[in-house]
Length: 212
Image (cartoon, rainbow, N blue to C red; front, side):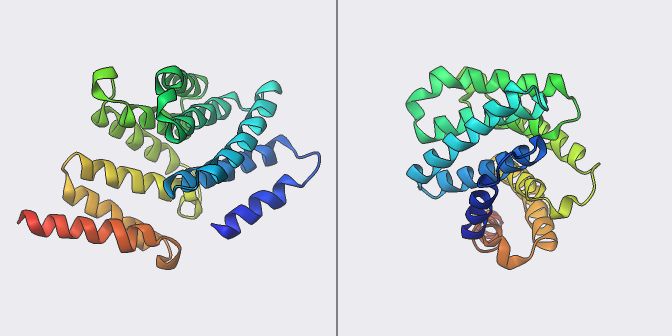
């Protein structure tokens, strides 16, 4: 992640960036902020989330790829909840609405489906959340991604496979979860994705063994 952060900082210094490059930068910032939140680096997450939101505002003002803009807005609202759960009642609905807008603007944009699924997955069922519905949207996103080229080299695709595996695991379908984790380990260099190899996959195998 140090190399990832350095790449973000390097791109950020480029003046007069094209819209394509700004959108690419937002994608890197999105991944980095998610990692920071997952690793309890809240101050770092806040810093790079602020920068990412400014980039999204720039793209939105120029009406550039508004489906992706809304997908990232949905994600960033979710990050705000991750950093401070007390804001959930205020920004949770905004995240949902942006995810829906992303799908409406481009029905073939997998990222919109991912963000809608994320909202469904983490929203309590009493407020309308559904892990089963989330999984269906994750799978739709996977199908859309697999229609593109070089998906095995796309960190977004590998991340999505991980999420799907975890969703199957949470829903009690351990064998399908195992299949997804094994698929990931065949695609990705083990050294670059130790989270699945050394943590999730061994834990899943232990749970499967205990249920026999």
